Amino acid sequence: MSQHPKITTRLGLIMLALLPLWLASSSQAGPDTDPAAKAYHLAQARCHALDFAPHLAQNRPRWLACAEAMQRAYQLNPHQPQAPDILYRQGDLYAEMYQKFGEAGDLNTALNLYQQLASRFPQHPLAAESLFRSATLLSEDRHDPKAAAQTLTRLLASNPKPDLAKAANAMLNKLAQTPPAPQAARDEAQPPARPAAKPGEQAELTDIRPWSNKSCTRVVIETSAPVTFSSHLLKKTGDQPRRLYVNIKNCRLARRGQTAIPVKDGLLHQVRSAQFDPQTVRVVLDAQTISDYKISNLENPFRIVVDVKGTANATLPPLPSPPARENRAEVSPPTTAKPLLPLPKAPPATTSSLAQQLGLSIRRLVIDPGHGGKDPGAIGVGGLKEKDVVLKVAKKVARDIANQMGIQVLLTRSTDVFIPLEERTAIANTQGGDLFISIHANSSKSPKPHGIETYYLDLAGNDAEQGVAALENSASSHQVSDLQHILSSLMQNTKKDESARLAGIVQTRLVTDLGRSYPEITSHGVKKAPFVVLIGAQMPSILTEIAFVSNPLEARRLRDERYIQALADSITDGVVKYAASLSVAGCHPAVQVQRDLAASYQEPSSKSQKATPR
Image 1 (cartoon, rainbow, N blue to C red):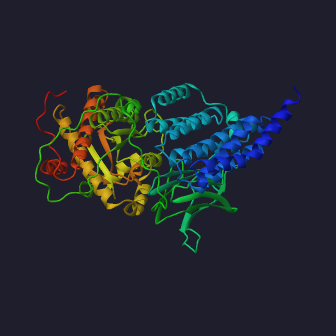
Image 2: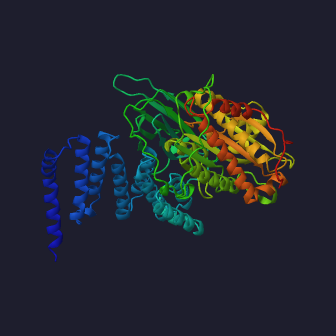
Image 3: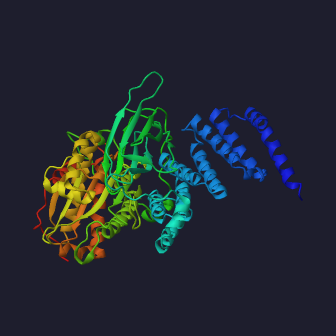
């Protein structure tokens, strides 16, 4: 028995020695001659060898060699079909290393790799699996239920398979019932949290989170306290690609934090950070291709948001078809989709939008229930919370649109959990959303104001619009004013125009449909304001304020399930009509579309005839 470890070790060494010959012969015998695929197979074999040599598996450098072999395979071609598998396997390796050797850095690396997979390949089946593993690590090893809940909510927003959705919901329920672990337990798995910097003290760079799609990458840099920063985009010199750097003043790196995060999405190669001097942290975005960037900051906690734009220099994997209806979790129950009613033909319109001319259609809708978790939103009459009302409406809208239109509908959150504003937009971008609708409820210091208004992203036209934006952005009016300086270049005119059209149609349906059954439905029209949750959206996007929770009548209605359903029906009706208007000219009645659009910019009278007031 005492000789078995030696025999096992010898067998493992023999296998490692024979691996190159085995791989060479297998590659000659098969059609696989891709260097990246070969490198992946070699990395797999290295990892499998640890299973045959348990004695070697106690050696951390052996594990690191496997992980580095996987990384080399990934770097050879970040867009290869095996790329998601490589990232997933890397994450597993570092997670196992953390379990074996207890190095907190291994846990951080595993979490970064799982999150990178979910951001880089959001439609791949392993994306949901990686988020679930990440949530498990955050809950059980890092003892951070808040971060685990956020990750699970992101997972549920991606419409995972029913069994995974069930497991995620079960974990969410367990987290809600579990008291936070003692600080000492959390400190074992991560560097101790640093309190907000006091005057004269340095802030700390606490996190860097990249989000990717094929035309834009968003990088969020979080610090423990507000900081000043500057940025500069270096010119391309020879074979050296362009680099964007951000200097963060009066800041230092978190202890044992990861200094380089691979992105490799065709726009960015990686994001790395270093202590440039005793008072300055420099974050460098190594570009693959980059044409422009925009940078801004958000509060509570302080975040620097960098949006990098360009054209990926490699073909990204195409989006798969929407999953089968039975895989759509709670937002898409297994029911037979109702086709859109055919509309009579009509002469083509004299003018049409760019989306109409291109014959664009809607495959995927992202619905964002505002606020959540620690952010209740507006508090209304009798303690009515905005976050609860809008979640109810959003779930019903998601279900009804999935049933009526047969498209995929995603929720940025399906439970009472906090999701940062910039990450809601990032979810819509990485999931390839064709429309983005954020649902909110308004509030006023006076109980008298009531009614409905719908916004699209643009410069605020007056103080009232800035006031609503300040409320939803949870920032002061001065900070909202600052946002306007970067807004014009953040948006494309085509997105703004389509957003305005969508806002108009949804606003009209809300006011008109509800007005048939409920008295005193007032329209405040279509407006524009710099909402953070809409900034950077790569699709037509709107924010609708469905009621005033501070108004006694509307607060009472918002507690009535029939009214909640009526709100959902009206929003659904607006999306259906907008989708119909995008059909190629001649397929649907352009005359009716033009009438809808004309009506969308008129405020229906609150004294119009109503049916059966409630």
